[in-house]
Image (tube, rainbow, N blue to C red; front, side):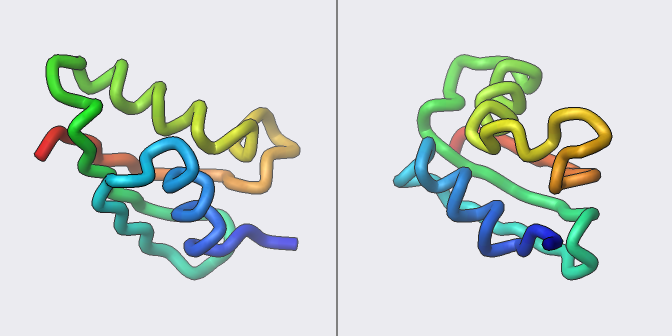
Length: 77
C-alpha cells in the first residue's frame, strides 16, 4: 500500500510536535516536505535532515521502503 502525504506528516509530527510541517506529493512514492522547528536552531542542515529521517522510522530504508523519495527542506524559525 502506498504511503500518503498525511502519513509522512503524522510520523514527523510525532518527533516534532510544535513544528510547521508541509508535505506535498500524491503518487505514493515521491514527496517534498518542509519542516520548520526550533530544535533545528544551531544545527547544520545535515543534522536537521538526519533528525527528520529518523522520525520516519525506516519508511525510506532500502529498496523495500514505502517511501521512495523525499525532497526535504529544514530550518529553524
